[in-house]
Length: 193
Image (cartoon, rainbow, N blue to C red; front, side, top):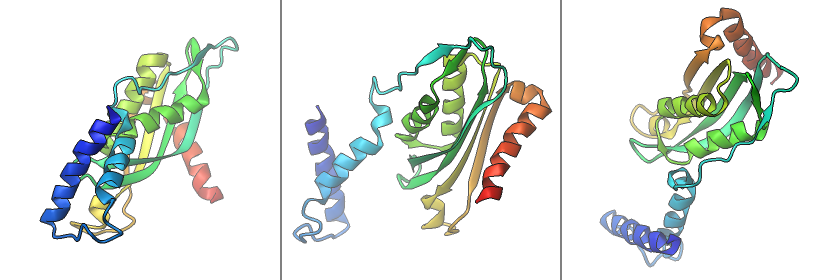
């Protein structure tokens, strides 16, 4: 199955390269169609059925009722408008109810949804929806910071511009103090750098 996809994608990449007038005999470009095909299969792995992360949850036996936050989760994705990379960091927090989640699973959720043609706004919503659906927490909040090469290397050409999106549910939406705690914890990172 994967080999069939590689062959089909390679064919189309090769055709695109021909249209652009690239020298397919150049030793540096001879195997480019296959390399691009393999890369696309890897970076779009979030589209494959069954690749959704298996999350491990544990009983909240300690009755922990404060924020659990994993910040600075690096991600790489591809803009669905231009098929050019965007990348950045996601910050995910939740307040547990009956279950807590293995911390690495929050990073896996971000990675899963980033591995597909994506919009940052949709990525942010997909992450929080997954947390809400699987955990049923008292509240959750996701902030995603991204740099979009479609904005930096083409079009408006503004290198370093940072796009920030957020999604807020439950206690984070209802209680200003909870939301402020999240934002202060994000600020701690910036002050220490």
